[in-house]
Image (cartoon, rainbow, N blue to C red; front, side):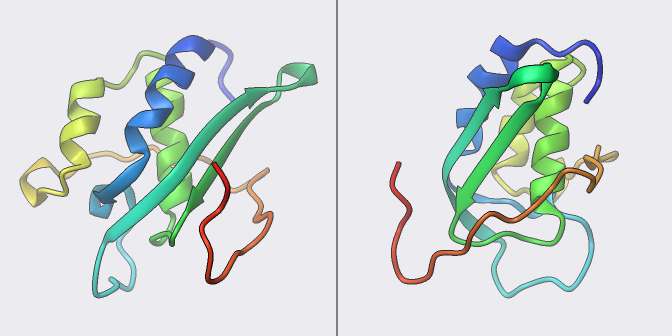
Length: 123
């Protein structure tokens, strides 16, 4: 995680991703699914000892490298290196607004906690 990170900015922007959106701009080219619409039920950010910042994403499914791109986008927002208006436009899924350079968070430290089938997670 980068040294400068405005935790308040990071937290205040996390809810932007919640809800049903076209996340095509937040994935990496790979095998494209039939639909790029996904619902994020919750995006939570917490701070822990030793300076660890934990990002938790709960959703109905994820595109290829979507979580790493979302984490990278949140980091850039927290560093004030990304424009929130541009990010909001990307959530509309317009190919005209496709991001030219994605910051993909490294895979180190990324892990799957659990998979729930047939029910929505508690908020």
